[in-house]
Image (cartoon, rainbow over all chains, first blue to last red; front, side, top):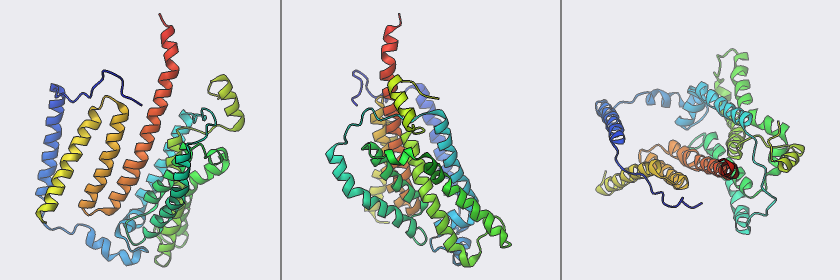
Length: 244
Length: 93
């Protein structure tokens, strides 16, 4: 992973870059001026958000905004993540491991220490999201880190070869979210209008499902394509062609 | 706000600008990615200074960690593609 010889970083200020810099500085200046011209103290929506906190089912205003007040946005975000995986899977195959080379012993013993801790932290971030900074996205990213480490050490074959379960877990977050969003309408509410008594439980349910899907989604993006099934991978490694 | 914090913020802003500039200008893609990851970690620190711990967590985990890993895996794939394409290019007149 060395730099190609004779290539140095191009940090010259060419005329084009100066012009772009001028634009960016103008934009930054305008934004700065806009911020400075705001009233010195403004509560914005914070007062409303905090006043409604007792009805939202959680104690962290950010989680309340993400999953209750603006639940629709988060629903769409999770759908976008799923679409990203579908897109990547349609375009590329996962690279088969070059050979079953054993992972470095340093990496393996590092993983033995770190992986259980990372899984614990992912669950902790999910749980603490209801009353402090944290939540499904942060926890999912940590859990995705676990899968990335497994990938780097060639230990993750079992995860990517069970395609039915993999697909089930990838759509789990979005399905549970939609099921809850529509399900609350049966009780007479609007879309995503959780009943107050069960809001906390429903949010935790959505976040738990989303955690699994987000972790697998991010890891699937890292793997970079649909995993090959057994017969596919044997023919691919023999012929060096991508099977259809 | 005491002066130590002001100095810290100033250094943070300058470091962010420097990292952003060099991450964009790096001729070596690997170096650019490493600088981008460092940028993400410092950005998380900046969010902490702005008292937005939720965004700081997301920035450190998603913006720096997972995006960095994605970029590195993309680079590895790119290098493999280049390597497998090289004999083909060599054969052309």
